[in-house]
Image (cartoon, rainbow, N blue to C red; front, top):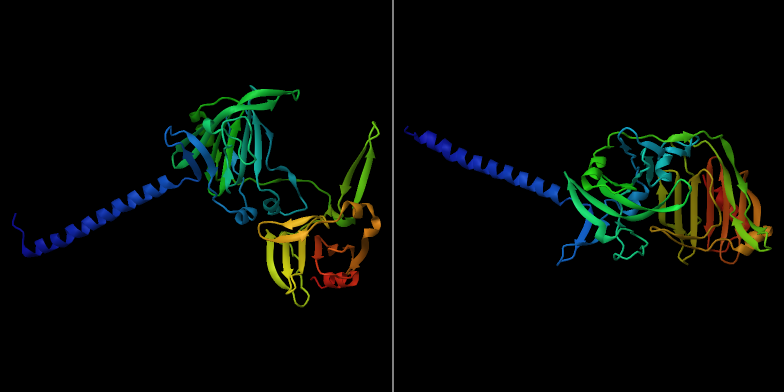
Length: 397
């Protein structure tokens, strides 16, 4: 067949264009495959000579701040017939006086427990996939604070697109009479979305058996908490104290109770946290909030004096030691044992008609009170009188 000049021109254009499209398709396929392959939420390190795993940790899909505010989903595990659920992660924690979203502030992990007819125990745990060490430093029997897995017991497995950490090691459990017994613990860790998931059982199981259990997790079913029926009780203030208890042998055991608010008020779905107006010369130096149900703010003046303001829904404690968190630093040492034993160290007062506690010593001036379904507190390192504290609290709206 003879090609005309026009046909040759079309082919000259079509061949390079087709080659470009083919190259682009191959590049996209390779890139997607590489991206999928390289997505590994666990940091697994190996001995260069033996290739044995020496270290395993969760890299951290979420940081500390995100984890604290994460609306953690609760996934469903569908086990074969015969397994009995002995503990439901959604049961018995959230009073029905609180809205559904309160569970996200209260829970940063979920735990379901099951038992087979043969007595095998299975645990399904869920928590934010923050940084976490899974292994202890070596293969000795001592356990580290962060991780308790023997590196020698770990296998790294790829289950489809999911990196799985499988382990099997000796452990201990309690029998039906609460006597300690030795068992073999088999488990798997994996990450889905922003959740670190963990299955463990008190029986030796092969890798494929554990992977089959992973396949039984339903990520689409969003479980709802089973609320505890709770009577609505308005907040009240309760004074702190030191409790001395004399035992049969004549020894005296002492314990303390904090100044606090108690009750179970009804909290709306969108609670209104009262806003604080700092005195002149103080500027906001940081804040910390959780799901709209709790807030803590820090203010500072040019002299370095601090004011802390906190407001939360429901009951809370006053005058506790508070050195802050990863976001805020505070120098509050809390009310002393001697002050708790002395009822005159804390004065009763009122803030806009609501009951309040006032505590003043050489280091801090602080006031705690209730307003509707909220518990509030102001703490100052600058010297203040009781009247000044009350005026500061009454400006909260």
